[in-house]
Length: 358
Ligand SMILES: [Zn+2]
Ligand SMILES: [Zn+2]
Ligand SMILES: [Zn+2]
Image (cartoon, rainbow, N blue to C red):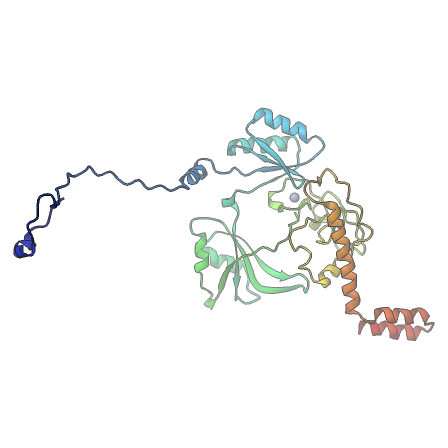
């Protein structure tokens, strides 16, 4: 290292002569080695780059599932299988093998659901503060003109009141720029708010096969109608009207459809039913005589997934709660029904009935 000298020469009196013992020694210059810095998570990033998780294939559990797995194992011994929610999650070790397994399952007429790679799942955001009658196609064009790849736009609804919210749920394909959607501040000169969509904590039901935990776009199962159990999608059902006392295709209970979250076979997530208003519960009907029907597991619902017994009890308690809430809503119901039983006069009965609903 060079020592600076010039500027001190004029003020030599500021320095003292010291004994050679105390004097600083010239250090021989050591060769510079670059300091090693380590990122202890480096290993993880390498793993992610070299071996990205190949999306799984979920085979529906059927009677001869083991033959299918044997065949897959003999061709692709690296594949791992795990039973989850009535489906066998087949984890291939490469995209190429994944495609071969899909082809094999299709050839054998097997029912399965494809998992999506994380990067293939769209970014879901909600745009707020637009007019309630904003045209979705126009909104799509506007966003695409800003460089986003829009997969679909849905206006959020209040299903109970059958009204629309001025909120637009937008699915955006993950390209390099997709996160820029959060920088969109105005649309058609109106200030807007872009928020991440928070999915409600409840199981999804597939519109194609009416099974749970997946959506129709990844579903290669046979269609199954929740209205008539026919081999078609529910929206293609010839029954267009509301069925008075439907029979549930999952639990065989009377008075509700399989899409009702109170159905004993409807998968339980945290707070699934407690978030419902009693009106929502009532709207879908109350299951009858099905509280003890689902103790024996069926092949589609292995006992390891759900504790069916405790969920049945929960369901039963729920049903009682619903009835109690309803009675609270019509406090004079019991009293009036007693009077009704004692009355022989038609007009009086009618008046009593009117009292209940007013
Ligand atoms: Zn499905
Ligand atoms: Zn049908
Ligand atoms: Zn049911």
